[in-house]
Image 1: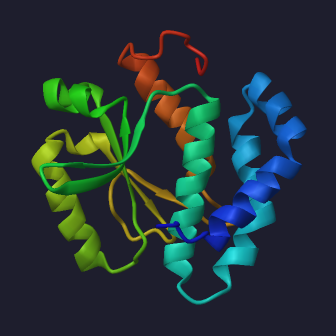
Image 2: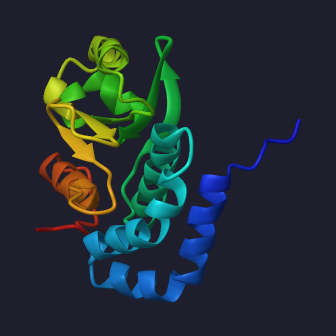
Length: 182
């Protein structure tokens, strides 16, 4: 069965492909915020003005994080299920989560702004990640939850997420290459 193409991902990765040389240079200079800000500047308004806005913004955030994690050489697992709970991103991996939750980060990318649904998902995630400070949320709007990154075209703290992930990984001693040192 063929997987249906996602127009948001297609648009995002076409933009990334067109900007590849510029982004490689920025990666080599560790200017990760600039990459994310440039992607948001060029992609956000084109996908967020349509119906299903939160879902499309979540897809954009997921695509950006996958691209950034891969190119930053940060070990992660994506879209995995553990104990019947789906996780968007686990850093570094499920084995570390099971053995040492303090050294593991879960990133939840919400495709809704419904506070009740978000709280339900956080309760689920806390069943497998008791270190609540190690559960980070990506939302289209600030709803007052702790450890939240808001993805918006302007005034977004989302552009800092890769740097913060790099710091988390370095503090935990997981990034042997220490690419993202402060």
